[in-house]
Image (cartoon, rainbow, N blue to C red; front, side):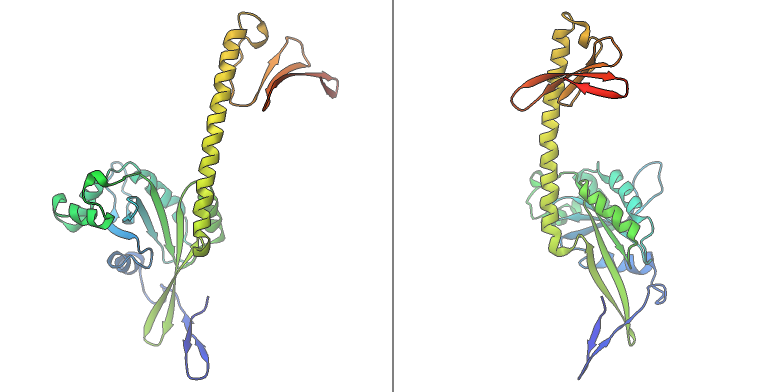
Length: 286
């Protein structure tokens, strides 16, 4: 996207630049500016800590650790490069590290960043969450990721799109700098997920979770059924002796002869037994 300045009789394009060309650094400038005002990234966020790294056996630090209005943690990773590097991998590690944090630990982290006591900042956090007490906080342990960069490589965006399809929640915000006279302008654009498709993406994730839940219940029913069948059949026939239960709707059994296989199959309204006989290179089923 190109920015234009409106003049009397035309639209003048604003010159693109880079953060490096403008001597703007990741931590000293971009991170500092977003710490003071996180709204370019999200108006539902509150910065809890900068350079957060309160864990053992690791010296890694999160650029910005935020709290969302929905009482979840948000990892914000910032790069000034044009490809984003491997920031999605880094952010996933951080998300795993903070996923076990409690609300009390969040209060402590915020107090440490303010250089004060937890009791003095607790009410500020509760007010942000729009609740009256800690008992009302619906702490889910969910962690979102926000990646901020001057641009993103195809590899990174492909990885993020795939991860989002598998129940992660990662947002990519492009900060693109422009030079207009003596001023540097920054255009903040959410590119993943596209804002107009964000609600649809949320619905797809919810639908996918429901499908997995239903599938999990069905697979557990199959597993229990086969387990009970094997247990009851073993004293009566050697066909299922030594067989392990399965989550599939079929169970294979050998009859002690090469080339012969029995398959017990559960269908929607009935069940059947299939016999497969291999004759040379051909295979027949009955």
